[in-house]
Structures are given as C-alpha cells and as structure tokens.
Image (spheres, helix red, strand yellow):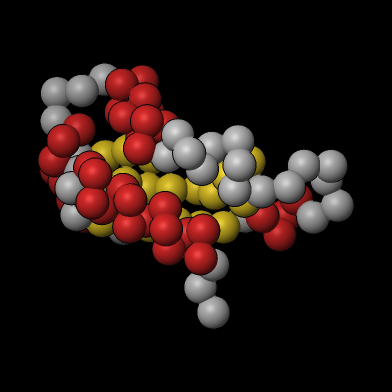
Length: 94
C-alpha cells in the first residue's frame, strides 16, 4: 500500500512544477524510535522548469511547493532536482 503522504507530495510536484518524473523513497522506517515524527523522504524531481536555474533555487522551488508539508507530515527531505536533459544523461549511464 502506498504512503498517502508520498502520493500527495508527488502529485503536488507534478502539478505545480510540471514534473515529468517524480520518484520518492520513504526512509521513515530508518528513523523509527527517534524523537521526531513525520516522513523522511528522498525525492527526485525532473522538471523543465529547472532549466537555467541554480541548484539552490531548484531546492527553494520545491520547498515552496511543499511548504505546508515541511515541518508537519515531512520531517526530513533530501532532494535531487533535475532537468529532463540531466535526467536522460543519468539514465544513459545506468
């Protein structure tokens, strides 16, 4: 069964950033027993909106989209924001 937080996050990124690919890994299980609650997510976002944008600004864009979730249902976030060309280059090496 899919995590509803992951589904919501992925849909928001697709809708607001016109993401052509979103891949989320929920690492919350690795943090069981820690004092904090919330999901620990690793997210790859591929969007043409990231073209000619610095890495820090890409992160800011994603944080803006997920501002309601961060600090609430999301406790920790690791991001890999890529353009479609960057994504294709990575996939060609796999």
